[in-house]
Length: 240
Image 1 (cartoon, rainbow, N blue to C red):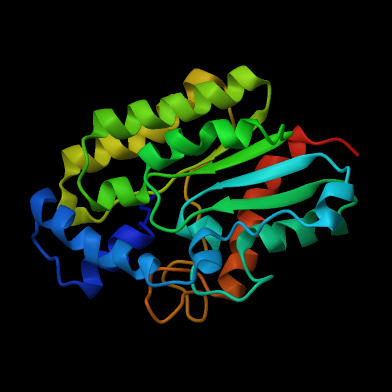
Image 2 (cartoon, one colour):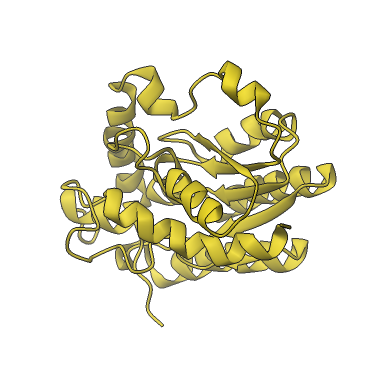
């Protein structure tokens, strides 16, 4: 089945990248990523400091670990996919607390640099969502794959359970690059025996009302669908 990329496909359309190569993609990605630098810090990170209420909440943690799609770029508090995932879990009787550890603009390299802080939280489950910014910049597949490998290895070694979410790239990146990029997620999911959601924005990208005006990030309604996409990959790892 043909899949359509999230940030990468739309960025290619908005920036008129038809026919471009990875060297151009690298230059233009900095323009897209610079949007996050203009955000207030709390919006750019989507990781508010722990509150007294959080410290008293003894439920095991599910950490959503990724970039702007996880952070909820452009959304109000309570409208990110991790927020809706929390609501879904509550409705199904699961006693877990979802923590949003998404940072807009992050690459897999940033994920490697942050993964030990995620392990330190001692989560029961981590949902890993990285790679979009790597692809937009046309970074070497070998580097993206090595970084994702390191993230998964670190998490699995710590004893946490992992769900991996995948994306894809626009056609102008070339069939060879896209094939290797897509294969990264499947290969690592198989290597580490973790469940994988092939396309995070299934039922969201290209659907009226599901994407923001930038045609890059999900709306609140879209994030509800994303949470529903993630839910069946997470619940088999949980207990009631």
